[in-house]
Image (tube, rainbow, N blue to C red; front, side, top):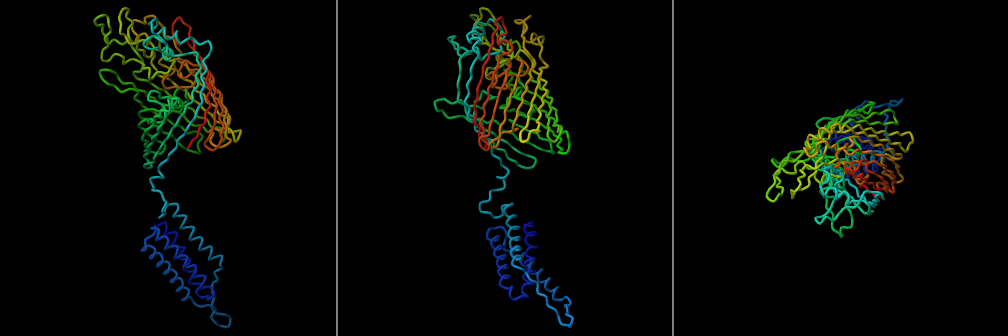
Length: 565
C-alpha cells in the first residue's frame, strides 16, 4: 500500500495544482472538471476492486487537496507583480490539452502497472504460491529396430554353459536364460522392432529462498533404473507412472546446495559412467563459486547413497560414496571449457564365497538365512561385468540355486571434460571426453574372495573406459529450425564401471562394449524435435570367460519425436 501512495500522492498533488491554476481561467473549467472526475472515478474503481479501502482513498484525496490549497495560499500571499504603470499583473497558467492528457495517462498507467505487477484486487489473479510452482515435462515417441550381427554366438551356447555348471564365470547372464524345461528363452540372432513411449512430468516448488522441493513422475518399470521407456503392444493395457524423483533442496548459503531424497544426477559426467535416466537415492552437497567476471568458476560435490539397506542377519548394506572437484573455465568470450575429476567408491557390492549352507538328506543343499546376500541380482545387472558363482559347485548335490556376484571391487576414478566453441555463430562446435579407470581392479583380491573353487583361475576383464563425442549445431535443439549433428565413440571395459548404472542403448546396454553412435536432431517447431540415432556396438572380451570365444554385436536404429512442455 505504501508503494501505491508513493505513486498516487505526487500525481494527485500535480493534478490539484493544475486544477487550482486552471480555476483562474474560466474557459478551462469544464476540461479541468472532467480531469478531476476521471481521477475520482479511477480511485473509486480501485476501492470497488478492493485494492484500496475507502478510508485510505479519502485520506489520499484529502492530502492532495491540502497540498493544493497550501500551494494556492502561497501563491496568493506572494507580493503581486505590477506593471510599469503600477497596476497589478495577473498571470493565468495555461494547461494545454496535451499536458492534461499526459497527466491523466501517466496517473492511470502508473497505478495500473503497479496493480498488475502485484495482482491488486484482480478478479482473475492467482494466489502468490502459484508463482512459486513450476511444471514441466516431455513426451517422446520412439521407433527402435535392433539388428544383431550375423556371426553372434548362439544363445544356446550361453545357456548350456550356465546350466551345466561347466564354468563359474560369465559376463552376459541375460543371454543365458532358459525355462524350467531347459528351453532357451533368449536370442542373439533375431531382429527386434519396438514402438516405445516415454512420459516424464516434473513439479518443482520454491518454498522459500532457502528451501525447494521437486517431484517427477515417469513411465518405465520398477526393475529398470536406467530406462523410462514403455514398450507398446501390451494388449492395450494402461501404463504405470513411477516416482522418478522426490527431493528437498536446501540452500543455506549462496552457491551451496544440499539435496536429499531421490535426487537428480549431481555429477558432471557422461552416460558412460551414469545413464542419463539414472536418479540417485541419498544426499548430495554441491558448492560453487559463481563470479560472472572471473575466468574460473570452481565447484565441488560430495554424495552418499544407499544402494541396499541392511537387514541382519540375512544381508549387509551396500553404499555408493563419491566426491568430485572441477571448474568452469571461460577461456574467451566464445570458448567455454568444463573440467571435472571424480572418485567413487562402492561399499560391500563385490561378491564373495557364500558359506551359509549345509547338505541335508538325499544330498540336497539347504541354504541358510543369509544365503545369497553376496549375489549381484538379475534385476540389477545389465550386461558386461565379470561375474562368478558365489555358491559352491558340489558334484552329486542337488538343489543348488545359481548365485552370481561381482568379481571385482569398484572404485572408479573419472576425468570428464567438455568444451563449447561459439566461433560459428549461431552454431557451436561441441566436444566431450571422459576417461575412467577402476582403481580397485585386482585379480589377487578376486581370488581371496572367490574361495577355493577358483584357485589359480584368472577372471580377466578390463578396468578402463573412454568416451569421445563431437557435435555441431545448437547446444540445445529447442526452436524451429535448430539442429545438431553428432558422432561418438565408446570403449567401456568390462569392469571399468558397474554395468547396472551405465548407458542402456549402445550394444543394448552395459559394459564390455565398444562402438560408435551417429545422431541428428532437428527442431520441427518450438520445443518439438525429431531425432535419428544409429548405434553399433560389439563386445570387447568374450561374454563367457571360458575356452569358448563368444561374441555379441548389435546395431540399433532409433527414430524419436520429442515434445517438451
